[in-house]
Image (cartoon, rainbow, N blue to C red; front, side):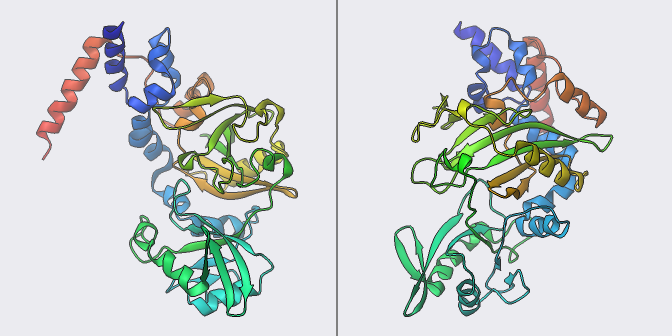
Length: 373
């Protein structure tokens, strides 16, 4: 048994499956190793799938400020935004300066919103997203964050300490900053899952060769009690969504070494089967409509927030974490998806190599590495 699992691991590794893939998709526990052909390996996604489908235009989505203004300019519903804070090139949505502490305080003081989110322009996975509460005082606005009360100037100084992590992106240094947005007042159906976090839905779209757009997979995300973040990487839950109906299914959370699969929220106790993503038809239409404006970025994961007035796009992601939607499904590579990918010139592995073939593949790779300068 141990030997057969070791050989299976070796054969799957040559296809691009890493140890987290094996654990998350439980590939070594399946009765037939060929079931792995339904799943996209992480290495294949990174080296082949994403570069071939999305190409250099995926950089548009990595710049969240640029992508936001692009979608907003086309009239696509997006989350309300105050502006981009940057100590040198900050700008508010009405074109005024948004760089100095005085400029930021004046703009925030004139707004009715007292709960705000500061989001890194080039951030990923919810890292360094700050949710703050503004409180008026005799000395101007105070920012409450992580149990501390800071002046606007002191809070912006704290953000400056994170500049190395968030001020670079793939366009070089000095063009980052922080997107400032009011906290979204989410739909009660989503708030039920966990009221302290904005619980969102990620919808995966594919722009086909004929310029039509399909909704391939979707999953909801919910935070844990007291947390403001719904990202799985920040301790949240990923919950399967039926793309036809919007009904929630099984969820999981944890890292690859301690995954837990759940039928209800561990804090609120809400059974996922009782929840349907509100306005699901509108969510689908919103994402496919946005995808049609970016047909050369073919595979996108759209993060959508649900408000009582309808869905709004938070951002689009070309790096949309293939593991999450595959973790609670039968895999991404259905026959229909394989046909769509083939039309785009992409043909994922269609057979598992035998042990001798896997050995030859591994030796060939080592030989090529040895010859490379």
